[in-house]
Length: 296
Image (cartoon, rainbow, N blue to C red):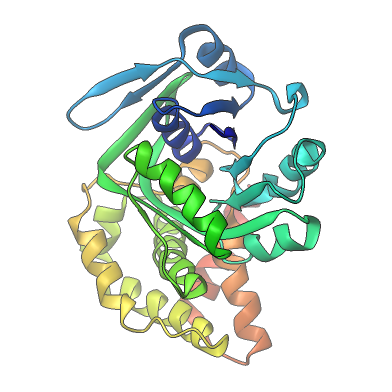
């Protein structure tokens, strides 16, 4: 049995932790505020399209962490990864498996800089968010955790996800796999936030811009020796197949005037394009517009 920390019980971490809580492993979730209070009292509730279910979950604030963890899943936003790692670092060692499921393509490398643990690279495909304190709303059937790196650590994590009936993949080229996810989320997080509309709306009304911004992101990836050109049409097809009102976490953060991942999901592409002397006019226009919105 492994002792597993799930840091961040939002749309991603809340759903994963709830599923893991059904396994034989010891799961400790870390959250804050009213969400944490509700989970401590009543457990965590998951609402899917066709069913609802609840599960008890040991939940704490990060400053209440105790003992040693065999596995740490960072499910916080990219801007909280460093502080979350610092809070848990005294509870892990070189044998601990750590992974970030935050949006972005750099987080595995960041964890390797900070940590001597067994770091895996990873990403998650899911449409979910906190609907209310203690309640996770998951939309559609999409779920896949993609992770890889050190073989034994990858196999260990995969066996745990299999036990939780959480679909997972462990591709040999994990960097390209992470960029495939990033291609989609960077494009549609930027588009939905810029237009203040759902994925269904931007696909219906701004299809050519969707194509263009995906191409710009793929061009940046190619400059970094990662070829994801064939994923552009797949990303468009996935977007068309989602519920019309499906959104992105960055759009919801802008809408609710919260801290957001603009720099990770939009600014990173603009920055790398400049480094590699590439033109990304659609991303640059939307990034600048969202910077203004962020300051308002």
